[in-house]
Amino acid sequence: MVPSPVSTASGPTAPTVLGAQTRFVGEIFGDEDLLINGRLEGKVQIERNVTVGTTGDVLGDLTAKSIVVAGKVEGQVLARERAELLASATVKGTVQAPKVVIAEGAQLQGSVGMSPGSSPSRGASESTS
Image (tube, rainbow, N blue to C red; front, side, top):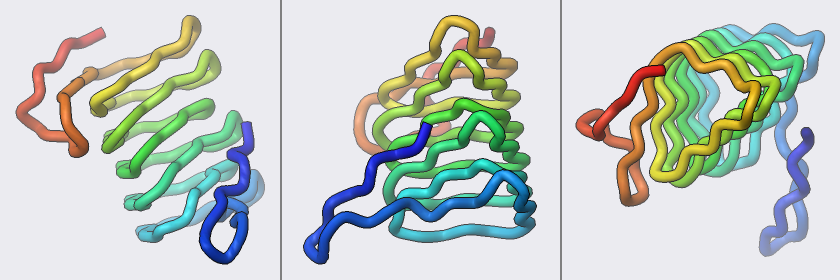
């Protein structure tokens, strides 16, 4: 799944891509969409959207406006608007967003927190699966 280019005042922009054969260790901060197809060990804070592709493997926390997971994540998935786990997703950790979608076949070992508003909060009610 590849996000569509986003229109900006200067025209559409493609997402920043971490390729399938790439391993990144560290922190990523930014204001562009991010597509993770490789291995990422660390922390991600993006103002826009993060997609973990089917070959993506994240060990760390993801924070963004919207997060779609098709690959693997071990850590927190914190979305300000929406988090979606596709059928191929495997998540070990917390998923928190005002709107959470979990497709049939997705694997989640951890908790889900849904809180109204635009920012995830640690005080939201949680359920385990």
